[in-house]
Length: 405
Image (cartoon, rainbow, N blue to C red; front, side, top):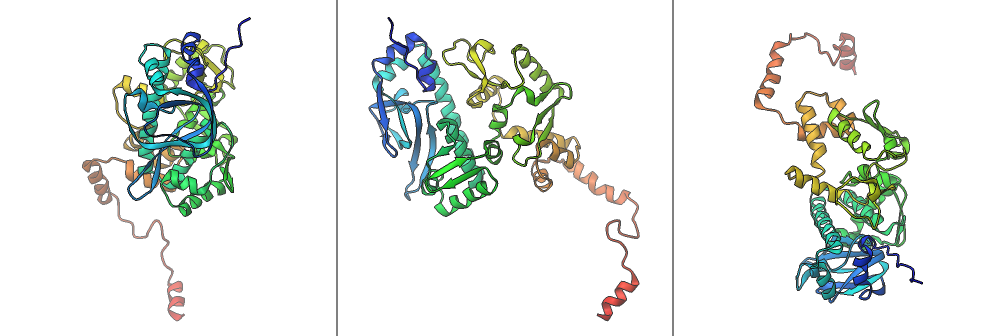
């Protein structure tokens, strides 16, 4: 009788076929990792596949300030520099949330990585996702406020830990974000008042993930968790109920013909789809085939895709464009404003408040000199009114009473 097959939680190990995992099994040693335990600092003789918990990659600056540059959970592997042949790597990788997993000698993993096959393909995919994450972190740290950065960081942790209650202190959050503790406390208070999180001594609890996604700098979560019930093919729009928006008001997003054609084509690949199924489903572990092939056999429609960042990078590569995901909305806003769409309509479509829309219109509205000159010329083409259309004429009685006072 054959022994039962080992069930791995680590995404890379779980995705390997029998032959691929068979070559590694004898070299994988189970380990239990304590919080703050260092896995890699400069160099390491081992690589780690986490089954649960969380590891952080931090860089320490000359003034002693630490900033997190990466998060690793059961989605990947600790020890990517080893695979690239780097003898040393700046920074420190340590356990942020107590974990367990498997350890393997770095040289052995490198030898397996250099063999063409499934392990190499999955590690390359994770390497690409890791590079995207690093680039996104750099952009987020530069362009967004602490509250947005904290929201995004909590989402990264939530994705990997898969638990609503995460052991985190404000001091630790400050170290990860590279900001003073009082600043983190203020940002956490904002997210708490909005009803997105709760925090007690040493723990943060995610209460409203969709709200946290809306508060973060990225909009990946909205697309990642899109379900077929949200798509109204008859009225050409996306519909989100009250429970799907942080304001509790719900939202309807109109779709143009190109978006509808793309969604209709994608729907045809899932003939047995149900309303509660996810539009972008997770890959079923153990499946094989084309990386970007759309085949129901390779997916689990009851679970959302873990991340769309990899698909986004691949789409950019195929299209031959270089931009950030966040730029798509800004480009759409600019095009609508340039086409003369009223600001109120644009605000409704993109989900911005009127005040935000006015500020963004000034930033993303691109007007040629001729357009501005035409706007000024319109003043002289309009008949001058003797009375202001905004303020009513001042009554003499009012003026007299004001002087008397």
